[in-house]
Each structure stands twice: as C-alpha cells, then as structure tokens.
Image (cartoon, rainbow, N blue to C red; front, top):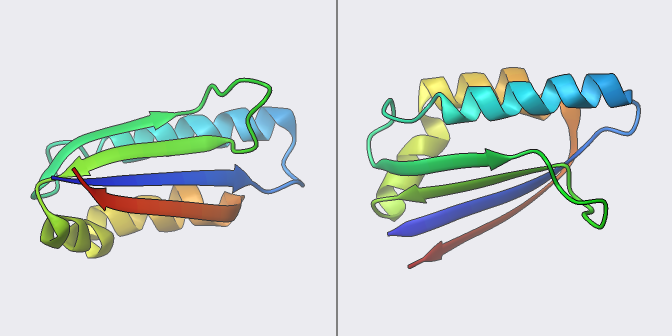
Length: 100
C-alpha cells in the first residue's frame, strides 16, 4: 500500500470567508473521488487544523500501489478537482508519498 499525504497553504489574499469556502470545496471535491479512481483505497481531507498549524488543508490518501498513485495523478476526475478547486487557491504544496 502507498500513502499520499499533501499539505497546502492557501493564498494570503483570500479572506477568512473565502478560505472557509475554498477549504470546503477542496474537501468535497477530493473526497468525492472515492470509488471513482482505480486503486484509490481511502481519501480524507482535513480542513480544521489547530491554531498551531502552518498549513490550511491536508490530504491523506491510500492507494493499492505506486502505479495506482500514478494513475490517480492523471485521472481526468482528479485533474478536474485539482485544476478547479485546489491549484487556483493554493500558494504552497508539500507532498510525501511512502510505502506502508
């Protein structure tokens, strides 16, 4: 199994209200991919970090193997969420992929 963890920071120019809306959109968009992408075992997005956090959104997902993760990266439904709900609103992205 492969874990795929991403942390995003949202753009500074977004208001608190806009950030709340964006975070909810990212969560709904990514979690709605469950059952639609081959090899995606589990997907969860955390949008309620503690004040000590320096990231706004965390993706925690699991895949059958590295090939499934590669397929997810280019899957049209994932690309649509990434291009429509994530990339326009984020300033930084950190990723860690690892085998379990």
